[in-house]
Amino acid sequence: MAAGHNNVAAVGTSASNAKYGTSYLASYSQGTSHAQVAVLKANLRQYRSITPSYLWTSTTSLEGNTSNSFDAATKANLIVFQNNTGLTADGIYGAGSRNAMHASIGVSPKGWVRIFKSTPGYVNYNDTAEGLSADATYKLDHSWCTSACRDTLYSLGYSFYSYYNKLIQVNDACLLDGADTPEHSTHQTGTEVDIRNAGLTTAQATKFLEICIANANVKRVIYYTTHGLTSNKILVQSDHGDHFHVDTFS
Ligand SMILES: [Zn+2]
Image (cartoon, rainbow, N blue to C red; front, side, top):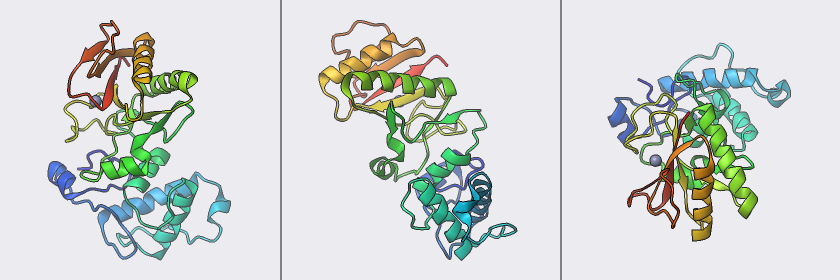
C-alpha cells in the first residue's frame, strides 16, 4: 500500500504507518536498506533523464543499480537533485526531498497536479521549513488538487497580492491519490484547500473573503467569521479560526 505516494519513494512515521499499514522510514540515508530506496533510485534515474546532462557530469550513474541499498552513488545523485530543487543538499531523503520529488515526477492516479512551491500568487506552506515541521506527525504531502483548483489558488493569490504585496500561504489540499488522511475529515476530492490566515490583518482577511466570493470557481469558504460580509458562499464554523477552507467547483 502506498497511500499518498504512488510512484515516488515514500516516507512515513509510526503514526502514518499505523494508519496505512506501511513500514516507511522518516528518512533514508547512506547505509539504509529498504525497499523504498530502490524506488528512490528509480526516481533519481528518471529525474536525471529529464534534466540537463551537465548537472550530472561528475556523478556516478544509477543505471542498473536497483538494490535496496542506499549507497554512495545514491547519495551523490540525491545531492544533485537537492541542489537543483533548492533544498539543503545533505544527501538525506526525508519529507522535504519527497515533496520536491513529488513536484518533479510525481504522478497522481487521480490526474491531479501538485500545488507549486511558490508562484507570484502564493507560497506553498507545506514546502517551507515551518510547514514541514508542522507535518512531523505523519509526514504526508497534502499538496495535490485538480488543475482547475490550482489555477484558482493562483488567481486568488495574485488578486490578493495586487492589493497588499503579500503572498497568501496555501496549506493542505489532498494527498495525491485522494486517500483518507488522518489530518482532515474531508480533503479527498481535489477541490478543497486550506489557506492560512497567519499574519493577516482583519482588513486583509476581509479582502481575501471578498476575492473568494467574487471567484466563479469558488463554491464555498469556511471561516470563523464573515467579517461583516454577506454571501451564501461563506460558511461560519468556529473551528476555522486559523485558516480559510476553500472548496472549488472543479
Ligand atoms: Zn480544510
